Image (cartoon, rainbow, N blue to C red; front, top):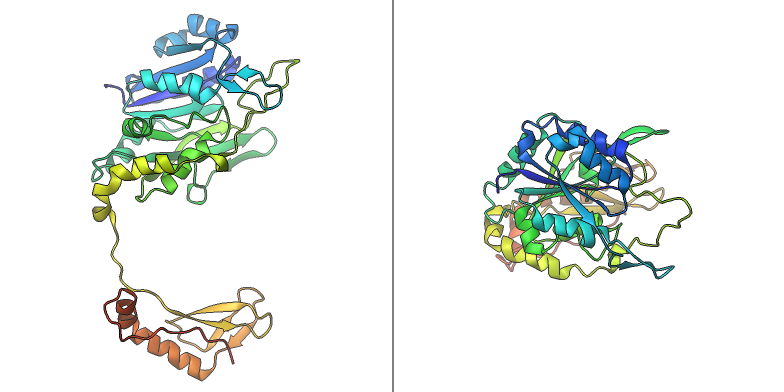
Length: 339
């Protein structure tokens, strides 16, 4: 295994955007770090001709994957069989690949970060330094570009999945797939993220500023044909078995990754005199005035409540011990409303 990352591109009759993506891959530190797979249909003459005649495609030493057959997915409306892009195309390419990391990119993507291959490797290996299981789900920085709406950033901290996820070889071997093969088209990327988000350990990594892509339809619908009803409901997917596969390997690392409990913060709850919305009052309160976040009304806390707040600050250690079962004599502090 001498390649850093195996890149999988599934395309159909979009030579212009495919060539743009391939050209952007050349800004890698070393193009030999990349193993590039391109999957296409047997009747896609445009892509077949491009791979045979285009000099850039020749220079990149692309591994082609031609899909033949009627496909394993069944349309929910017309009952016809069609290609399941994750089972019929991505899965066999991933099984034949040799990269340390696996990354799927559509043909509407353009890489914008020079030396991205080294950048990926450094970020990921630093994250995995004390994680011998080498399981990680990677979200790269994504910017959406729309012809009418311009560009907008994808805030990784607010989004729990990646449109174009990257995983390690160990994740692929553990799960047995790159993206869940039950999803012919949509939903697979969200489901993969949910598997990691619900795991016992933190195995998600965000790497900023890697790619941008045009917000255009990923699939070309030929004239006179109706697109198949193919987007699966990811909420119906049974992912517990896949979560358990991840959890089984991370067990040995959980103790090292655990954080220490310093204190259990206790808060008072008062009711706003104007809108009756409940307001959380922190134990560190240094004034008897609190502002309601619902209606912005200013509320004065009774002196007895303020005194209790100060007392709680001095007894947090005993309250924490009680919660941990270390001191059964401590009493539970009850909520009190504004009088």
